[in-house]
Amino acid sequence: MSRENSRPGALVTGSSRGIGAAIARRLATMGYGVCINYVTSEDAASREVEAIERTGGRAIAVRADVGSFSAVEAMVQRTADAFGGLRVVVNNAGLSEHATVEGMTVDAWNRAVAVNLSSAFYAVKAALPYLRNEPWGRIINIASLRAMTGSDHGAHYAAAKAGLIGLTKSLALELAPAVTVNAVSPGYTRTDMTKDSLARYGDAILARIPARRAAEPEEIAALVAFLASDEAAYITGETINANGGIYMR
Ligand SMILES: NC(=O)c1ccc[n+]([C@@H]2O[C@H](COP(=O)([O-])OP(=O)(O)OC[C@H]3O[C@@H](n4cnc5c(N)ncnc54)[C@H](OP(=O)(O)O)[C@@H]3O)[C@@H](O)[C@H]2O)c1
Image (cartoon, rainbow, N blue to C red; front, side):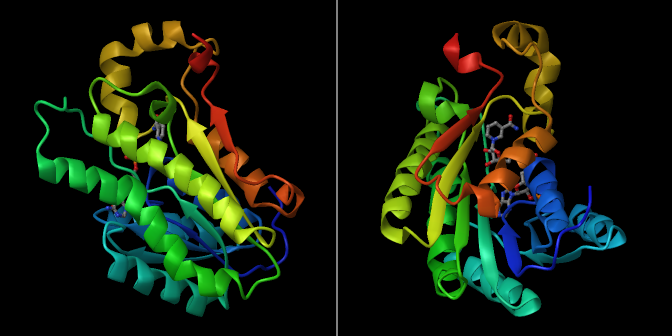
């Protein structure tokens, strides 16, 4: 992939692994200086930075728990300082734990809401002064199929992701026209998050997906890259599904 002209910063939360890492690599090829964010996987984050730099891109790794406003605020500032501004925020960090409401602790509920929903509010709140300094900006929130279907083993996750779609529409109204705000809603995607369920129930899951396979992280990243591009200026407040058609079942 050819590298485009140098652009300011792009923050991708939760980008040491999986979908976030693929998005970060893709935005780097578009010329953005990318913040690789992690909370535990320091080595994986460093490898992502090295991989981007090897192909001529710019990246920094920043440890920040997206469930903490002060940590997110500091990360946003570091990204803008490192790359001379911030134009793209991708709220991708997510946490999915299996639990029924009966078995779920209040702490588990609060943590799921903090990491999957409040984190996006924190990042946008901290990034707004920088986004407003740019000629245009992009916010892309990574939701989930579960926001639409609900879940019998993760009500906290499904509710937080549904909240993320409400936040997306509200921000789209509030920040138009300079900043567009959209959500991408993946179905089953091949990452650490789905490794165990695909290993255990893969055949049953794939049988329900018209595409007959899980997505690769790069396929989700391609959609995010389009929404982050100059060409996507007229799309805002949307949630775009990338789920191989499973939601039609
Ligand atoms: N995979 C799927 O099938 C699927 C389907 C629908 C939606 N999604 C959504 O897509 C997004 C990415 O999922 P994935 O499958 O790529 O997940 P993953 O493989 O589990 O990776 C999660 C990433 O988020 C980071 N992270 C987790 N908690 C964090 C926190 N508190 N603060 C900062 N970073 C944190 C992790 O950092 P560390 O490496 O440091 O732990 C890692 O980089 C999530 O929002 C997920 O809900 C995924």
